[in-house]
Amino acid sequence: MRMLIMRIVLVALPTAAAILTPGLHATAASIAEPTMAAVTTPAMAKPKTARPASVSPRVKAILTMLYRRGKTLKNFSAAVRVTVNHLRSGETDINIGRIWYQRAKSGRTRFDIHFSILAVDGAIARHHADHDIIFDGRWLIDRNGSAKIYRKIEIAPPGGHFNPLKLGQGPIPIPIGQRPKTVEREFQIALVKVKHQGPHTVGIKLKPRDPKAFTFDSLTFVINTRLKLPVLIRRVDPDGTPTTAVFSKIVINKPMHHSFHVSPPPSDAGWTVTIKRIKRSTP
Image (cartoon, rainbow, N blue to C red; front, side, top):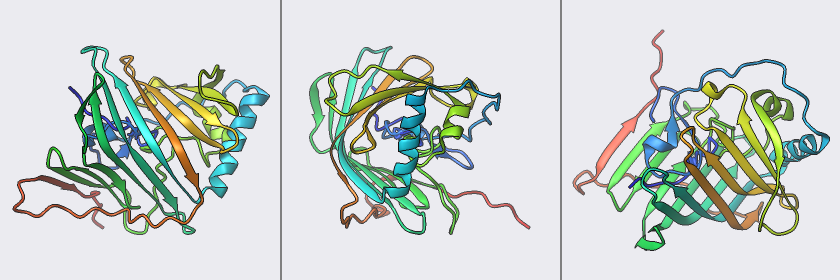
């Protein structure tokens, strides 16, 4: 059985899910898999730059809305439910928790995804999963209290910036604050029908123009046009495995006092601890 968080963006979630494999400049693949191997991926290949076909006015309006939302989004929190359907085993994993995201005036971004319940095939396996995936602006931290695993990877150098929402690179893969022309250049984009998501929603599906440039086959977003944020992200892996993250109880741009910090475990507590720093070239 494989555990999950978000395999979001997204890109980054990362991934998470990305949710959501260590590398020199490791970036999270999306928001849907709570193991570090699934949260981070090797550096992406450079996408093909062939001139894309023009998108419909409706798609362009959606991308523009999300781009502008990136300028007004200071923070958000939400309940999150991540479902992974494992095609080979037939099992369905569901992780339930909460996400906090914050962007400072300096442009520094932070997030914390905390899972408190894990269910397998409808049965609750753990009521208190005690699992956090945190990006504090520099370090990506995977702390799994149930498994006693603590992994810490340096994503950005001191003083550097990393966008966890960047499509294909961040653990929360959301096209917020990304220029429509960039998204159009790297992805084929189509409108999709939205089912059972309530009013004021629209769906778009993104498929990489260069399949070798990303670690997913497609990303689908259901976007609430009033909130100007996705309320559902569905990632499909190249092998067909679907991961779906659903967000609810979304709170935007309210005072946030979340710490975005988790302490490493004591050295004598029986935890497996891994810390990886960015390799820096010597002068």
